[in-house]
Amino acid sequence: MTKGEAYIPTIGLEIHAELKTATKMFCCSKNDPDEERPNVNICPVCLAHPGVLPVINKAAVFHVLRVGVSIGGKIADYTEFDRKNYFYPDLPKGYQLSQFAYPLVSGGALNGIQVTRIHLEEDTARSQHDPKTGTTLVDFNRAGVPLMELVTEPVIHSAEDAGNFARELQLLLRYLGAGDANMEKGEMRVEANISVAPEGRLGTKVEVKNLNSFRSVERAIDFEIKRQSELLSSGGAVSQETRGWDEVGQKTFSQRVKEGSADYRYFPDPDLPKILRSAIPNQEESKIA
Image (tube, rainbow, N blue to C red; front, side, top):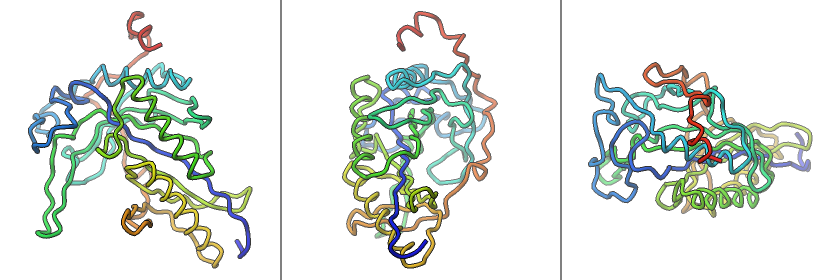
């Protein structure tokens, strides 16, 4: 790639949205995003005590299916939950219950953007760092809250289109009653995968995580497009990595090398049943449509 070449941006979005249910994804603890007292909506299941068993939240599953029908997606005939293994203080089990090979919804489109998949998982706890003392406290109220993840195809080519897609998804979630999707409260979080390359080529993907406002989504994408283009024009190379967004400095910053699916060592969760579409009663399936 040489100086003066025109670089085309390619963007894909991964959007997480907390779902509006009475209880958490795999236990009976209250799902209350407005609770300010730490560690009150917790139980042995969402704290991962030895010997506990999860139970699937039916309401969360149907929220995702309604979203899938609304965007013209294909509802899975078979789906299952997987263990996504990684080790952070805000993940009490040492793995996250998510979906890998068999998501609830495949395909569809929203606001003219093709969707790859929609799947269901559990949220993590919330870490709160105190720079004055150098300590980090963990609030487990959010651990286990139902979390929908929507992944788009990498077919977005501007920050404006990415922001408009996220706005449209927020409206859809609210209209369906699936979630409030308040970004300022962390109920909807956007991650953008961004690359630039001359037309007809593929660039190196950089992920910018946890964008919590539409303005941040658009500004982070615009910054990355400019940063990567200038780097390539000067003869440099883009590293595949995960970056964060500095709201004060209005720039992205490097966080870590980007993980691949093999790093998470996915495998089907042995404690949860598989879900077959044929097992859903007719009257329940009609509610989805």
